[in-house]
Amino acid sequence: METNYLKRCFGNCLAQALAEVAKVRPSDPIEYLAHWLYHYRKTAKAKEENREKKIHLQEEYDSSLKEMEMTEMLKQEEYQIQQNCEKCHKELTSETVSTKKTIFMQEDTNPLEKEALKQEFLPGT
Image 1 (spheres, rainbow, N blue to C red):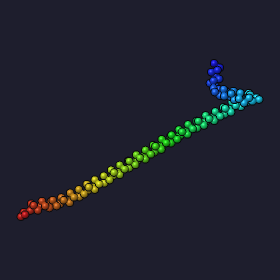
Image 2 (image 1 turned 180 degrees about the vertical axis):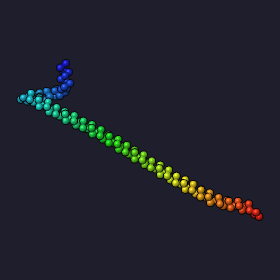
Image 3 (image 1 turned 30 degrees about the vertical axis):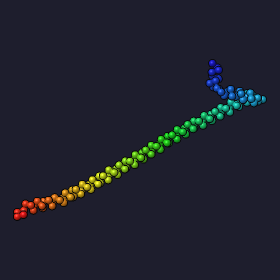
Image 4 (image 1 turned 90 degrees about the horizontal axis):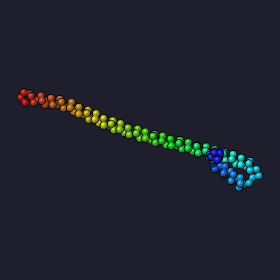
């Protein structure tokens, strides 16, 4: 039971520390071991913080990319809508002009038709 606790808390760290003490053989191995463990913990914390910062930066970068993609899609959509509106406006304008021409021509031909009909029905013609 205590072995599991030590493995969970110290893991590979304690084995590395003891191997370092055996290799260096300092005059005060307890103090050396304490400094080594303290340094190890400090380094491990810095690595963990660095890893978390990288993850956070990557998330921000991904979010920024998604935002840029959405902005680009919205710009494309806006451009297409604008093109469609211009096309519809041109079609509507050309239909209005042709309708006005037709009405104008109909209005102009009506008096001529009436005049021709009058001349047909005139006595002596």
